[in-house]
Length: 184
Ligand code: IMP
Ligand code: MG
Image (cartoon, rainbow, N blue to C red; front, side, top):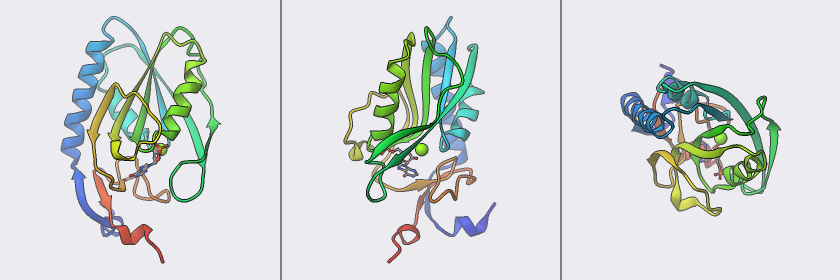
């Protein structure tokens, strides 16, 4: 374990075991809901890469995996600005059942833009699976079909989630000490 990174964690919010159990439950729900069909998972880079890897191994359906990357420009530290597609789909999703897989839903800016974009591609269906949701921060309505955990307005890292590209490798999800990002 990287003890240097761990010093910046105020407390663990979800342990490895809690994450494992919740991802298995989500997988079981998705297997039941899409029984007899096949699925394309679209991971939103980069925060979702570990969640996608764990979730896909819980699926018993035929599925393919693709990724998109978006960047958001806005004032301050939130993604309240314009959303730009940095990496587009590699697969054609027309006629497919699509499941967008995201690390965390915050203001909803990123996902409302992304879902609107995907809706123009004639998919058979488009649903959203997010590991974490901070509903108190929402400014754009987003419909979520699968949610791992709803959390208060904490800034969290680990299990793929970053602050300044760090902490993604922590195997649990932890609350980052505010002193790390509240630089004078
Ligand atoms: P939204 O567009 O405001 O919903 O922002 C969603 C994106 O912001 C997520 O995909 C994350 O990349 C990032 N984000 C929001 N909250 C957190 C957090 O607590 N930790 C790490 N990244 C976050
Ligand atoms: Mg992200």
